[in-house]
Length: 279
Image 1 (cartoon, rainbow, N blue to C red):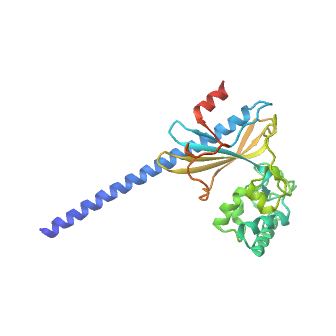
Image 2 (cartoon, one colour):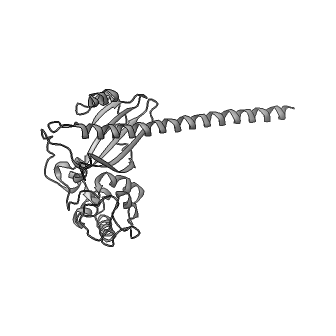
Image 3 (cartoon, helix red, strand yellow):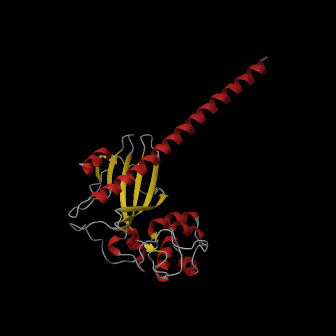
């Protein structure tokens, strides 16, 4: 009798614990889904802010706002001309980048050589043409059609792959990044001497850019989404060429909410930003 009661108690405890675990997983899944939706909405808002800007207006990035569901989002914009083009960069530039990322000059040079070999052989031979309009000028060759193909290169570990994505592109067509558009980390890695130029009055954003939305939900769930967008090309105001799940930089502050003090980042309600553009 005692053993039966003990067994029933154990079974009851297991059922309760299992139910709590399933509830927690469901709650976590719902939170991630909400964060993903908020991130995509924030990127669309960033595109709208950029496209709707007049000839004499300069959209200010990054900006931070709060979504209707309570999520705080920070939207940043990265110019593709300020990144290393996998199809156009010289082997020396590629070697400098991957040497800086791996802290190994020999490995960096080997990776650079394999990237050059991949693009010279036409990259993915199963494709007849570049689906995203690669501008690197390699006539008759496909090369890299997306930065996600970087993981096909021997020597690129998963961690190095995630780190390198922030610094590479297939959309600039330049042998070396434009220093004014490059991130501070990339300028340091490539020893680019020029300092970033401040925003020019009346200059409109054009060409290929990456919008990056960093979302924090009220329960602390964090999600990052990126979109590669072409602005003002082919007679279209914009064209979303690629959606990506951005990697989280755990060395950066994790809270994009109002407690962060950053005078370069504006904060507002996302709906108010949309209403201001619509009016």
